[in-house]
Amino acid sequence: MAEPEAEHPDDPEHIKERQRQLVDTYIGLLQSEHLDTRWKAAEALGDHGDETAVEPLIAALGDPYIDVQWIAAKSLGKIGDRRAVDPLIGALKSPSKWVRLGAAWALGKLGDRRAVGPLIVILKDPKTDVRKNAAWSLGKLGDGRAIMPLGELLNDKDEEVRNTATTALDTLKKTTSTETQ
Image (cartoon, rainbow, N blue to C red; front, side, top):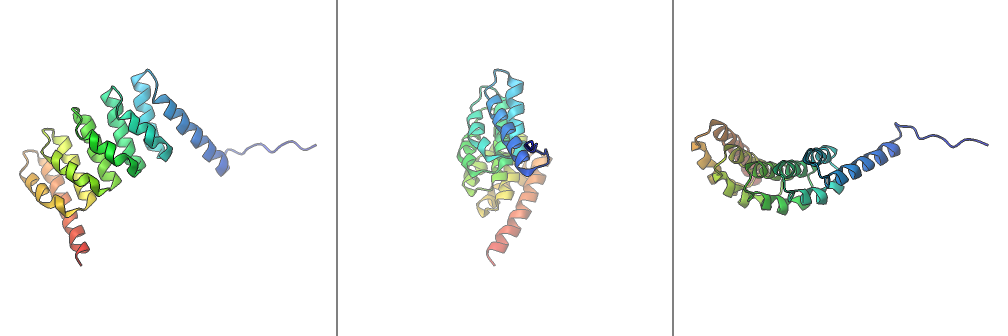
């Protein structure tokens, strides 16, 4: 009687199943009582890019710790699923600069123009990194509504914000001129 064939670790089905198990494990770790475990799980889920993590990461935007919220926002941007757009727009109103920064970056990665208006609003954020990420995202979104608000950032007190706004405007001008042709 022949023995059953052992699974080969390089078999694509074996690899896919192992990835699913890892993602499920990380999703479970988002509920850990340990802060470090939760933010590392959120980060790992973003690195894996599996869409089954979107809803648990959206829930993690409400974690009591800013570290977890910030990493969850960034991970949602890495995954690229548009179910995250509205929760990330909501996260732009967080009292934490880190959560606003992560949400602004993620919205640029998602590429959904519903974020244009809320991102324009946070171009006036008191925190430099938030303004810079909002400007970068608006450049990525390619919506002409952002041209004038980004133009106002050319006078920002921070050089990095001014440079990011300049790059975003250059991108927007190319995008909007191509769309009108």
